[in-house]
Length: 309
Image (tube, rainbow, N blue to C red):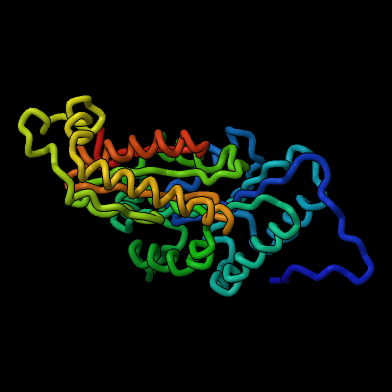
């Protein structure tokens, strides 16, 4: 695969014209929802190319830099393990370099990677009766998924956004993609807040995890047990707990202090997970409180309550 060439001495590089160019590189494991994500981007105005050969990505970036037709102002490309048959690791390891080169040319470039638990991927392939692209006579489905993980690790390692779709339905995935990528030119970081229950497992692909299990638990109040952190009686119970209020102030203060540093360092997306035992009361209300706080600071915020219907 050819590397980005240096400018010739004395030759002025072409400058992008017209609207600022936006390039989204979409990848992930087969069965994780890449087609849904790509169709979502197409619906909101991106020109989408699926399964682009990797050696053409550099040519595409050069074309965007030189100012293609306005139809290509927002472009999304899908790249997967089929892109480089037989030499995936060797070619895919150049992707971080290509992303840096595109950004240096003034192209807004985001890398989105979709993942899911192996057991979930096996179930999805069984339900749809589709064949995994890397299966063959001597390679089982679990082995094909493991191989695909290894092949795509260079892309995952440089991803700006990783979304675990294990417990995400089609509609939720569409909302996540729209929220995290559409309107992403805002100078403030886009924040995804997710409540969860530790007894159901810690979410994957998050930047920060906060544990609320030491705080007073509404579950032990019989009249509150069937409610959630969205209900007024639970909110009043938690607001009256000094420990809960201190924890909320500490979390808000941490992010108020450090988000500007993350943004200065080029972080456009942050994923924050808030957990309690069951994911019904404390984590839900803390997540909603943080939503209001971050929105008041001008951030684009999306909230998911993993354990709520």
